[in-house]
Image (cartoon, rainbow, N blue to C red):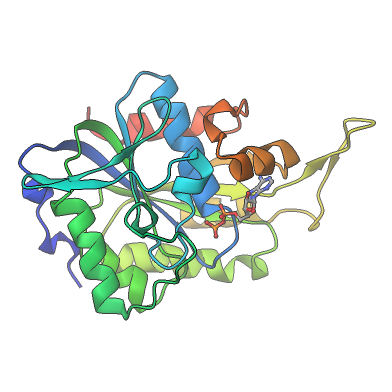
Length: 260
Ligand code: ADP
């Protein structure tokens, strides 16, 4: 199960990708794409060149979050990625489909083949941080995707209601199986702030994530509240306007853990 099947330098000859960070979750709907997008926006604001590789082939949400549609074009040299308003490079299956609503009904190996091409055939520029929005779960598809892209580190996204840690541990064990370092855990949908009194309400009861993170020896990189403004920006394709700084510390932590 060695993920290093694909060497880092197997990108397109015109690409130069320094760091690849995969964002995973034990199940769908916990905000993996939102966290991927947030990390990308924060890194871009720090002045880094950033790319997002949307490896969630059957549930691609990255282009919509950034309001980028149908931009990927091909040439003899490779596939040109899409580009957000603030110059984050993007590749997603949705940039290649005529109809964004068309379902991608592909089997695991075909999905893995497409993701591999997103790595090898896309004309990425000079990228400091490439964030990879992984398919959810810990089954066959995410596993084969891991074998298609060389990943430097993994960030696990979870929500407080994830059945007492079991799902987080599955994601952690998958990373261990792949021999990829886990950079930390991000908890999403941690609480809601009451618009009247400002009190934090923990909708799912007391979060266990900090305890689980320390059991696994991992940092809890950040806790993001449920914030209707974030959901609205996703829906409007204007995520680069987000003003949430819930992951500022996470970015500093990540920078410290990856070689310069
Ligand atoms: P995943 O990638 O894990 O399937 P998404 O990032 O697509 O999950 O999030 C699922 C839905 O929940 C999206 O509509 C997103 O806008 C919304 N969402 C995620 N996190 C938050 C949050 N912290 N506050 C408000 N809405 C959120």
